[in-house]
Length: 261
Figure 1 (spheres, rainbow, N blue to C red):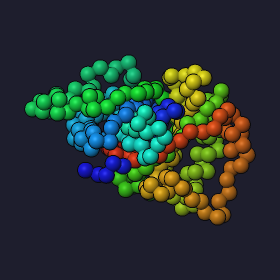
Figure 2: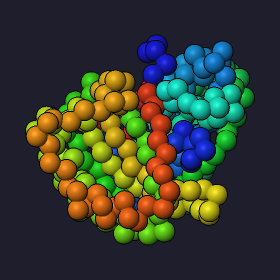
Figure 3: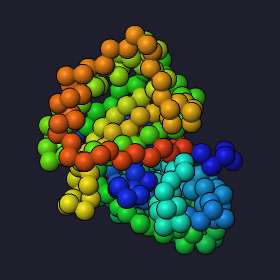
């Protein structure tokens, strides 16, 4: 098993060993954050990657589930009381998810208690998100290049306008920078948070940066001749009403519809 590679006050988004999630307007992602104790983490990851990954693969074959990911937070704040695992599930039809998580059908000879991970974890937050945009470096190899992700929450009263500005200014800039080798970043995307909402949430959109190494995710570098889209960044900054919140995650396991085709 690979080494153990999370919403705001501790819920953070994502994504992985093959991360190219197709982005379409009707798709909705469910981000579920959990807390798992250090002593239970190895068994938790074993059960998720051994059993529930296969269940997700079967659900993708049946057509509604488009994406499943398991992420584990690197470091953190107030760790004993914070989420440290993030699941992302993306559906074509959010109103038609019944019966997807039937592990007994996939593993009829395995006792339910041997596959259970809910009893080993505490569900802390659930968030509904609409994916908006995604770009990646030319020639990226997901199995090799997508190992860590930095999830960034943005707080704004104008989420649609903020997303539009990112897509206009940041998306083409980061795409060309990745293609030209001016940054070690391998992918970038953004999304709108549909629910929950309110002043205590302190986030309405999310973006994410993908990297190959933990060092690059923690301390990304830029070529000296990089010219940033300053006017666009200024417009984006003017829409944000509080400081951004971000965490780094190791990408443990991912299944998506592209992988299954």
